Image (cartoon, rainbow, N blue to C red):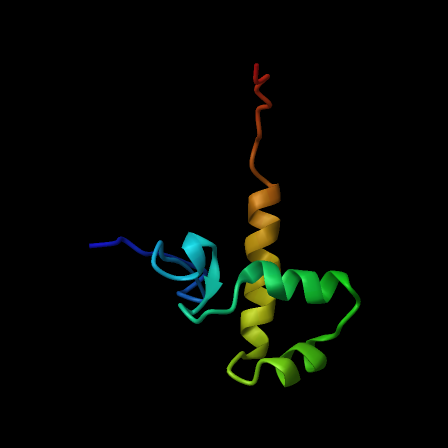
Length: 81
Protein backbone atom coordinates (compact mmCIF):
# COMPACT_ATOMS: atom_id res chain seq x y z
CA UNK A 1 0.00 0.00 0.00
CA UNK A 2 1.51 3.33 -1.05
CA UNK A 3 1.29 6.60 0.79
CA UNK A 4 0.50 9.79 -1.11
CA UNK A 5 1.41 13.30 0.00
CA UNK A 6 -0.62 16.37 -0.78
CA UNK A 7 0.41 20.04 -0.89
CA UNK A 8 -1.26 23.37 -1.61
CA UNK A 9 -4.82 22.24 -0.91
CA UNK A 10 -4.36 19.02 -2.87
CA UNK A 11 -3.24 20.70 -6.08
CA UNK A 12 0.20 19.10 -5.87
CA UNK A 13 0.42 15.41 -5.00
CA UNK A 14 3.25 12.95 -4.63
CA UNK A 15 2.33 9.31 -5.02
CA UNK A 16 4.98 6.63 -5.55
CA UNK A 17 2.60 4.86 -7.97
CA UNK A 18 2.16 7.87 -10.27
CA UNK A 19 4.98 9.24 -12.47
CA UNK A 20 7.61 7.37 -10.42
CA UNK A 21 6.83 9.43 -7.33
CA UNK A 22 7.43 12.81 -8.94
CA UNK A 23 5.20 15.69 -7.87
CA UNK A 24 2.11 15.81 -10.07
CA UNK A 25 -0.96 17.97 -10.40
CA UNK A 26 -3.99 16.56 -8.57
CA UNK A 27 -2.76 12.96 -8.97
CA UNK A 28 -3.00 13.26 -12.75
CA UNK A 29 -0.09 12.10 -14.86
CA UNK A 30 1.02 15.66 -15.43
CA UNK A 31 4.26 16.38 -13.59
CA UNK A 32 4.92 19.71 -11.93
CA UNK A 33 8.27 19.66 -13.74
CA UNK A 34 6.48 19.55 -17.11
CA UNK A 35 4.49 22.69 -16.34
CA UNK A 36 7.59 24.46 -15.04
CA UNK A 37 9.52 23.53 -18.19
CA UNK A 38 6.76 25.00 -20.38
CA UNK A 39 6.85 28.20 -18.34
CA UNK A 40 10.64 28.28 -18.50
CA UNK A 41 10.50 27.93 -22.28
CA UNK A 42 8.33 31.04 -22.44
CA UNK A 43 4.92 29.43 -22.87
CA UNK A 44 2.08 31.28 -21.23
CA UNK A 45 -0.72 30.02 -19.06
CA UNK A 46 -3.18 29.94 -21.98
CA UNK A 47 -0.82 27.80 -24.07
CA UNK A 48 -0.32 25.31 -21.24
CA UNK A 49 -4.05 25.09 -20.58
CA UNK A 50 -4.62 24.44 -24.28
CA UNK A 51 -2.06 21.59 -24.25
CA UNK A 52 -3.52 20.14 -21.03
CA UNK A 53 -7.28 20.84 -20.91
CA UNK A 54 -7.67 19.02 -17.59
CA UNK A 55 -5.55 21.68 -15.87
CA UNK A 56 -6.92 24.81 -14.24
CA UNK A 57 -5.17 28.18 -13.91
CA UNK A 58 -4.81 27.52 -10.16
CA UNK A 59 -2.81 24.38 -10.98
CA UNK A 60 -0.18 26.41 -12.81
CA UNK A 61 0.08 28.88 -9.94
CA UNK A 62 0.38 25.94 -7.51
CA UNK A 63 3.34 24.61 -9.53
CA UNK A 64 5.09 27.95 -9.18
CA UNK A 65 4.34 28.16 -5.45
CA UNK A 66 5.55 24.58 -4.96
CA UNK A 67 8.83 25.33 -6.76
CA UNK A 68 9.28 28.53 -4.74
CA UNK A 69 8.75 26.62 -1.50
CA UNK A 70 11.40 24.08 -2.52
CA UNK A 71 13.86 26.89 -3.27
CA UNK A 72 13.18 28.39 0.15
CA UNK A 73 14.72 25.33 1.87
CA UNK A 74 18.28 25.01 3.03
CA UNK A 75 20.41 22.51 1.13
CA UNK A 76 23.69 21.01 2.30
CA UNK A 77 26.14 19.68 -0.26
CA UNK A 78 27.84 16.42 0.55
CA UNK A 79 31.10 15.35 -0.99
CA UNK A 80 30.74 11.90 -2.56
CA UNK A 81 33.77 9.61 -2.96
